[in-house]
Image (cartoon, rainbow, N blue to C red; front, side, top):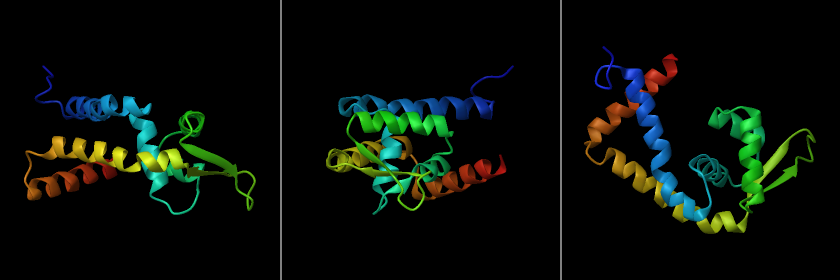
Length: 140
């Protein structure tokens, strides 16, 4: 009989659900979903506008999904979308002042979430966990 205790796929699925939901409650005050906040954080790690294609590759989300997330971020005033003058087929994404004001808060929410999630692990256990998860990910 499969239970949460012996089915790795189920453990990972339930863990992924919790990982996605936990910061969501704190992000609601900023009118952001966890997916929107993660993409916004990625955009803010760049000193210059980035392409939608870069976001799609980094997030491993389909073009229509990223397009929807970016549209909602733009509607909420968190990003600016412009056409790349070098390649008019590309859309360039940059954060707005509103997004930059929230950058530290969003970072703190995710940092606290990481601390809660891994707080019971030693530094060595955390290092091993990261290595193992990367190996599992790369094998898929």
